[in-house]
Length: 165
Image (tube, rainbow, N blue to C red):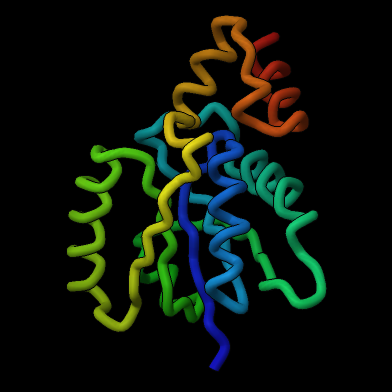
């Protein structure tokens, strides 16, 4: 049976922490679907199309023979319905801090009520990325700070372009 994992998120923008989780999640599944979510409550800086394109570009080098296949898809609606439609058996979530755990614990309990056959797997952020959050990266970029340690060069350029306008 082919193991399919789903890593959902807004990825606004994708950070080095996200990319680390992508690579580590690939070790657990045969196919990793990265669901780029619409979440207007977070007021994304980048459009859904821009975020999908960035994640596709950032994951292109992770694909290859003998590795899990990666698919990047826009994600609409309820997470568990999307997971079911994709055939995912695993939801992958990254954890950075206690605040993440509290939120994710509650979400996992609710998701288990919706579909107990889909497991949630938590991957701890690498110590280098534990403080990195897309929200903070955007704030630093908007104030002219150095974001190079937190994102890839292409994402850095995309952020700088957004804040030029």
